[in-house]
Amino acid sequence: MASRPPSPSQRRRASYASSSVSLFVIPGLPEIRKGHNLAKRTALAARRAKITFENGDILVVAQKIISKAEGGVLRLSTVQPSSQAIALGKKLSNDPRLIEVVLDESRRIVRSDRVLIVETHHGFVCANAGVDHSNVRGRDFVTLLPKNPDRSARRLAAALSKETGKRLAVIISDTFGRPWRLGLTNVAIGASGVPALVDLRGTRDRNKKLLRATILAVADELAAAAGLLMAKSAGTPVVVIRGYRYPFVEDPAARIIRPPHEDLFR
Amino acid sequence: MASRPPSPSQRRRASYASSSVSLFVIPGLPEIRKGHNLAKRTALAARRAKITFENGDILVVAQKIISKAEGGVLRLSTVQPSSQAIALGKKLSNDPRLIEVVLDESRRIVRSDRVLIVETHHGFVCANAGVDHSNVRGRDFVTLLPKNPDRSARRLAAALSKETGKRLAVIISDTFGRPWRLGLTNVAIGASGVPALVDLRGTRDRNKKLLRATILAVADELAAAAGLLMAKSAGTPVVVIRGYRYPFVEDPAARIIRPPHEDLFR
Image (tube, chains in turn green, purple):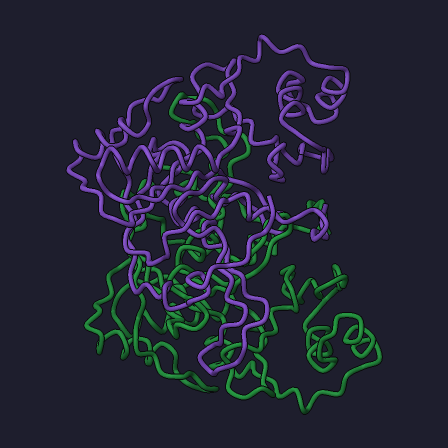
């Protein structure tokens, strides 16, 4: 995806000068299955919890329930591992069928030393292509990342806005590891209605000095904030962020992917 | 720093099941200078803004004001660049005196292709060793990262707790870039009173499946959340996070640094 120049509103730092933000979960979402209408179920769970949405609320939604609703779930018992997957499975002490699925979801293997770090077809660099065992019923099932998480975010934002009568933004998140730093953090893999990146280059700091290299990954910070309320086992895959000031723009999370030719660590 | 096994309380996921969190800035902090008592000034600014601290509040503090209070500010005009700094300055079109300072703060150059990515003496891998021009008075000045950000966090947490009578946690944050993803996010470089990493390995997800590789970088997610209220030009270097449930532990942010022998991208 081509990098777009920031809009004038994105450049205006004042737009982002929130002085308080609140985050809360939407409790009571049912287990999501293929074909479920996520917008309707989210709106219903919110009504039952007496949550009234406000214009500008950002809903951060765990990738897992998007994948389940979209049918991005696979039975490992149906997978025939290739010889490459079998060899990698031996090397990494992992299920060769899982590895076959990971390879299917990948454009390129980045590292296969201790874990399988790949570049997905979307361009995300992450462990196991985001293919995940956790919070799926049955040991035989894994979830895949949504095919096009930005499109999923746009559709969900549109459906939620229609359902609630409010202008809502959506971020689809997953937990990714990082080189150099231990631990996973929640990041944005899809976005609609909220800036993915905010370019402050050309603006000035408090001492009127020109900021040179300051592009903030706002969607990732929003996802990370929501991650605090999304402990894997808590069953709260939707978190609402309220009070954050931002310009309402379509800025796909795919824009956060560092273009390969600019990436020094591939 | 040696990796410590997580405490039983860190393992208990229930401890982290917050259902809402709020974040707000402390407005009206004066410009910080060497020797200023940051705890007193923060407590005073809070009182003036009618903010009453609560037990468990987490104060995320931008590295910049810690460095200023500790005197971690340098005049570039006093710096004599080495021949290596002069050569790198030409290659990177940057001030050789700045590069000299960066090299001084570094253990190792990781990349010097377009920007200078180094490993600092602390072990952080980041651009320009965190040496920064922005929000420092005068073009001639730069700030350095605190010598020991975990110690700075512990001291500030102790002083703030004494000043306010509440048990407060402190995270010292800075904005770092990432490979693979564009944009900076706020991360924890120092911490006191709050878990840096939470190890969920050995716990089970909602479907009773064992979680295998889930270590969450909670301090980084807290820092990122606060980053939403710390736009470079906003003059709000202290953000309070309230309502996040966590065990009160001493868990240095240095523990987040991935040990070099485990790092596939150095």
